Image 1 (tube, rainbow, N blue to C red):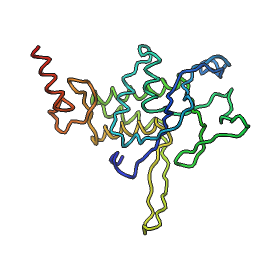
Image 2: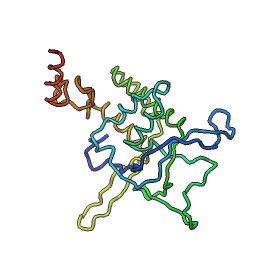
Image 3: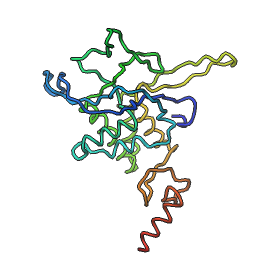
Image 4: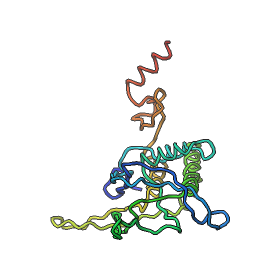
Length: 235
């Protein structure tokens, strides 16, 4: 993968500014295929803010891997989605694919690839945990130095990246970008970047936030944390 700051890789990903919630929807259940109540993560329908996950300087893969399917409350899942959006979009089979307005019109938003997507995106909670488990296992393998397992996991995933040409009238050359189709694919590219040694994340000893150390010996995200940690030891 190219450097995450390179213009070749990009993704503008939408966030619902009103946040997300978990709702119950009648849908076909994954286990038995019967219609029944299923939990979905759903945007509240507020205005959309876009950010660029690959250039945001945040270890989204590591933040996601810290969630625990058995131990994390649903509020932690909602917090993750409020910060980063949905990993992918799915629409329950029992609902129409697009939200209709009061006058019967259809509200459609478009991805950077030109593909239409629902105004209020949804993701089943079961599918969220399915995608999270794979990423968590990859991060565990990364920390264990087991690069082979990470490579095998990466190659086995359905990571979708679309080449996109950009027309620039004043340029004699065509410019193109690789655009992940969803946040899930972008997160796997972040994992690949760490696997390739382009980024190395570390926990700050004081505030526990993730940061990229400028040297191998750096254990604090900033000098203020180093001072604060030493004061705590003295007390």
